[in-house]
Length: 437
Image (cartoon, rainbow, N blue to C red; front, side, top):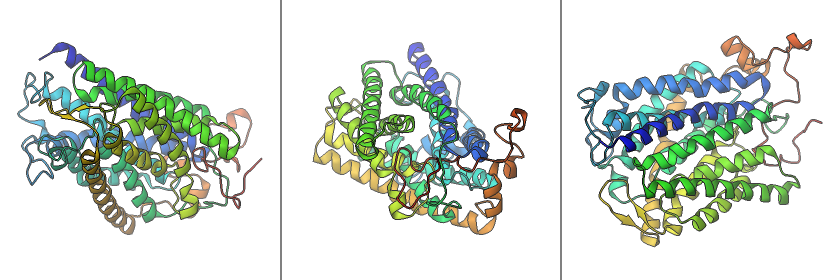
């Protein structure tokens, strides 16, 4: 055991854990005032549900010995049994328990990312049930494909340094499937749905940016030169993506918004995640600029195509994840695959083909299973609250609480009509959308 590497991965795990509350703030500020507590809780419940399932069987399904053709691990480590405190993760200098704790934080935040797409209309109990089944049927197997030494995508040489396929594409396409199942919010494309608290959005984005250094750099499981490359590329691409988003926003809308800056930063973080160990600093700038501009454009697709992705999970995480996952085939200057074998991969059409296989496999599997799972829940216990409850306020209905006590300030407790979620993070609403003063 190397105490320096162990301490670094422990710290990285704590940073990644902080990302889930950061995501809660980021999403919470973007919804209407009557939904902020529900939005926060949709992220926080993932901390509870996924942690318990990870211990019971999730870690074993993801990282135990392969049970079936590189698709899923066996259950030899159910309950995390037979893992000694001094036992090292194979090929590395950190304990298995430290590796398990680090990977747990990835499993927690991935379903939390989906929650932004179905904000303002989801039953909390149905959401918690969905999280339990989704991580079991989708996240644990896909993470095994990508990161387990005997996972089929890993063995093919697909590069995913820290989660472009397993986390962002996985969550993004699942968000699209779930939106198609449960339908649009009341008043979509008709009523103003603006962020109720932009400072909260900026705080959340800052926490995500901070925690992402653990997310990306920590994925190398050691503190060395590759770790340094991953960390600095994370910073570079995120900064460039913010500029790319704001540039397109200025050209398209004529203004630069705080929501656009926050969303651009997140788009850059998403895109660099799978490629942070494979790109040069200049390549990271190019990736960030492209990701920021393309994601800023993509968030407006929901108005043209008619799907109600409340907080633009598809436009940012799916699109950004695809861009970042293809980047190693286009921009890679060299990559040491994190399997302790010292294998080097460069860019080129061969690597691009491998990346396309990984992207396509995760897109197809996650969409189909999520759509079926969402449909079963929707047809049985119901996935969304009633129209009356949605209009009245999901916080009061689902949690018997409100985020703000307006009565104490001498005002009404009724939500203000003009306060709501983003009309697309930084995207212009269609011409027939009413916008309040």
